[in-house]
Image 1 (tube, rainbow over the protein chains, first blue to last red):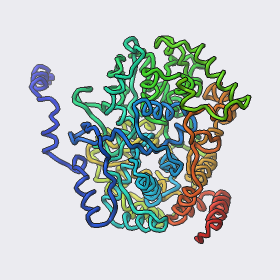
Image 2 (cartoon, rainbow over the protein chains, first blue to last red; image 1 turned 180 degrees about the vertical axis):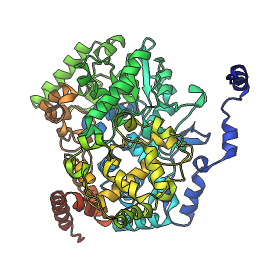
Image 3 (tube, rainbow over the protein chains, first blue to last red; image 1 turned 180 degrees about the horizontal axis):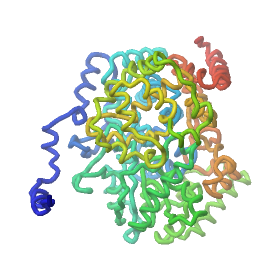
Length: 403
Length: 237
């Protein structure tokens, strides 16, 4: 039997393109808007919903629902991996917000979401994970600032926790009792907002503050699994970016800054982090990160840098390349978050703000292409470190980094 | 049990002792009793999309489809085998949520792992070998990884920058403008009040108790650290 190629091609031509409204009309659990239940439970006194403060920007999500992203009043829910091992990541988020005049709170009354450990070792349970989330949400609520989640895993996990709490009254009851012993109410934010959603919502304003030309910079984007695969309906998809077929989040920011976003075939693959693997089984992590991600990017797109928006992805893609070099693999792509990339575009210092000396893959050729004299910048950073060493200053301050 | 698995796993795991079917059924019933279980499995088309997108399936003898099928068929025998041989290979990336049937194989694995921990299975003990310092860090400090973990002997494959960071750690932490970032033993500064609240959560939800099954020594240390702190605050647990 011959294959009816012509007939099949004709059928394909006639097939209408992805139609968001039609998919919505079909309806399923994933596409429902959870807000009705969220506010119903508030009316019943089950929890307090912390409203997104005004002013906010509305951005489109996967199935068309518009999501509110606040412009101001941020309670920074920091990431342990960012703060601990790639501190230029969180520093850049703060620096960009300061430049845009954002009123924010950087709390000490915050724990990690503890999800890295949960996904690595399972030494926890649904109630403990929900209580940790609830404690942090209540702590934010007490300050009047709105949680902005730095880590992609925290963001994904908190959305999972929200789904579990929405579905299971007995879990809400258990967590509410625990909150009571802590002297706190059970609080759920109206939206769970990732920092990269703030960057996406503010991309045009960020671009207005751009002082470095990135039109010669080619980037690849690694979208973080826990951002758009866990509770997928909350992730930002924009019909103007990839025709709404992929999350728009980092690509939109890179494009707004004038960089060229290049595609590669394994964009959907995870980075290889693995949660437990990155710590105790790194042979898997290294192999996956280099063979399925970095090498594919090099072969197919040859970018100047790869951008991502999560703690584990920056760590994995950056740190995995060193060992692969020993095997003459086709690696050597600098890795950073789009927060660091945006900060550099806005004139941030590569060491005092973006803290690139904590990174592993060689970023210096990229800085040169951006018109940054990294040798001079490093000398400036070293001079500040010397002041610290001599006791002339205790800490590098925000005033120092912009001096 | 696969021969490949036997070559790489510790003897206690590769050659784990068989247990009566009733015991396997008891463990599976624990998995099924988790309130999340009905939201995670709806049957399986056997389409293999979850395998195609799974990073662990590319590198290990591992398949999220087999996991979904075993639990959907309620095959307690096979589920037990998977709890001993397979579940710790999963990357927990949740790419498998692409399942057209709406299954969550990664989520099922999370539950299976929890049951393995609660029952002190050999595979859980092996998986957590070398990982206990991380559990100690997250449960006792509230942050998972800390700057002082960046030691060249722990991360020799991450390049010479790790040594630079380690050598200059205290200075470079003070060269970070956010005031909460000047720490070396935690990711950021966590207030005392916050830690006390976290310890209460670990106690009240049974998360601390879970550690006892897989690492008694670690459990004793954590219990001591937490109880001492809670007693200082006049809190009895």
